[in-house]
Image 1 (cartoon, helix red, strand yellow):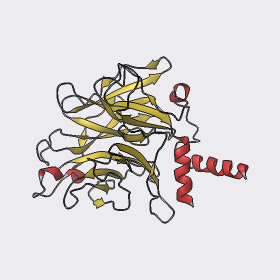
Image 2 (tube, rainbow, N blue to C red):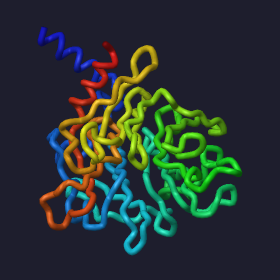
Image 3 (cartoon, rainbow, N blue to C red):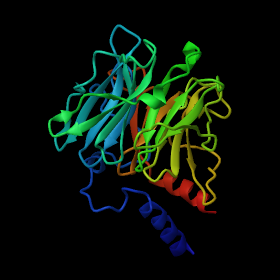
Length: 315
């Protein structure tokens, strides 16, 4: 019986895109070995400024995250690499630093970086938050391009509904984002599909544990069958991270709170590394390090809760 359970768990893990592939292991596996969260590079990446929404390219060992812009209530996107000598000093991404740029999200192949931004465009209202992306080139990241259709609102849309938050994308290029547009003033998930992203659909199937919170930041697996969501804790006022998996009939399992990740502090902005082996998230828990206060980035191995979620979806 134990052998069958072990085999079942192994098959579930190997079915996750990235796990079991032949690509060289990420440097993360040499530094982070626990399912208990660790603050990410205190004093270097996790600092006194506040860091959120990390996304990690395992094949290139590149980290992208947003950090509060000093002196203003805005954000800038930074990047750092994990080398054999450790993390490099975070640098502002080539296209960021002038406008409010936030919620970076790498495509599964690491070649496109999606983000939400207040950068101006003639198609949208000034100071509204909209979806943008940049393509990787041989010389670095290209000039950001505006995703027009997912960002366009009706002419009578109130200001509160003109923002689009937290882009996420699966291996097929399906775009997920969150908005407070009419008639869903409480917030709702939407999807849009390539190649032109002209069709926007309300995603009512995807669970939304963000009731009474500001926004539900989302991670979607490359196969589109596993989601990490930010939402209100079931019995407290703080925010937690939940996991849900798609079943064979296309429905989603009841969002499962992650006990190894969540605390009585606020946890949010979840993502998995592109190889699917680690979870990255933000928490304002006490870090135990005087150089990493406020909201910081954390990392932990994700093997167990992925297997549990996938197993529940197969029952």
